[in-house]
Image 1 (cartoon, rainbow, N blue to C red):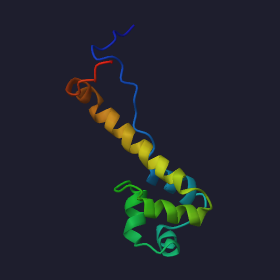
Image 2: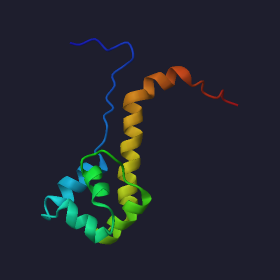
Image 3: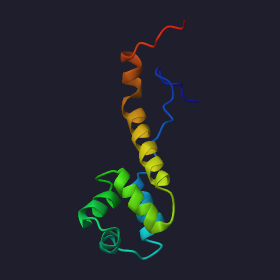
Image 4: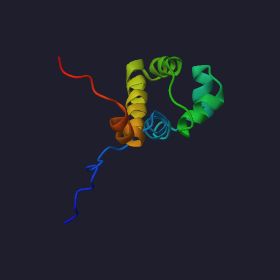
Length: 107
C-alpha cells in the first residue's frame, strides 16, 4: 500500500478545455471545418483555429456567437471556460497559495 504524500493526495485534474469540447463534440461529429465555422460566426479563422488547438480560451463574444450558431446558451461555453481556468490554477498553484494566503480569523 502506498503512503500518503506529505501534502496529501492531489486528485485535482485540469478539466476539458472548451476548444477540445468544440472540436470533439461539435466540429468532428458534424463534419464542420474550422474555416466554415469561422465564416458562419463572422470571426477570423485564427480565432477558431487557436481555440480548437487549445491556444486560446473562449471570450464572451465567442460564447455568444457559438450559442447562436449551435442553438444553446452562451453560459454553457462560459462555464466550460471558467471551469477550465479554475481547475488549471488549482492544479498548478493551490498548494503554493495555501502557504501564502492567511485565512481571515473567525469572528
